Image (tube, rainbow, N blue to C red):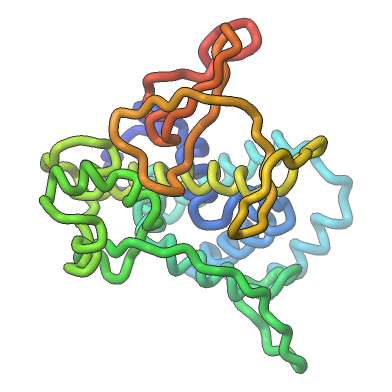
Length: 302
């Protein structure tokens, strides 16, 4: 069995919590929280693991019937049983489950676009991860794709364009070119992109760490954007209409903009109110860069 390069106990953030931003980046909040979908994918991965170890598929149906003939267990205990049993399986096969998990999480961060495309092609309600043949074509829902920024030498990988555009000044400071021109020339490497998205000068960084950090930032950005597009809230009443577009809006107050760098058009802003009642606005990435921390009702840090 290979040696452990990194103990899961030494990681600053729990493995489960580090999977969450990858889930959001690939699938969004709704699909990430779909319990049936998560069960389908868990079963698929278990079966693939057994297949890789030469397990006889004829035994699967017998075990399925045996389990479903018994009363359902308590979820937290069953999760513990899955973890213990997986550890025992890895011991039998000379595998390191913690090392394998870290390696896989780093790998799938480089496959976000492919996984998104696979999920988009999956038929709704199907347990299968790929589309099955259908007799009658189903008209697709027209969704305007978001523009993407290319990753230099990234094998076709891309990241959300607007996220990069929001840091256009840092991109110009680091590379003396506009975001448009950088994209025309092939984009930025993951390490270069890390520096731009974190408003820093370029410095050497481990590529896997850069990928994870950039994808996590993209996931938070898209999640915030999704919340903005979630629909009209209850009690919404229009106060203004756009003269050219005809679209309606509700003014909620006047906010003071705070930002370290000039904001690009359509940049995602967090609107927040101080204890004096005053509204403030700050770019989403700056609001979440550590200068503010989430607190509970008692005022303690979460």
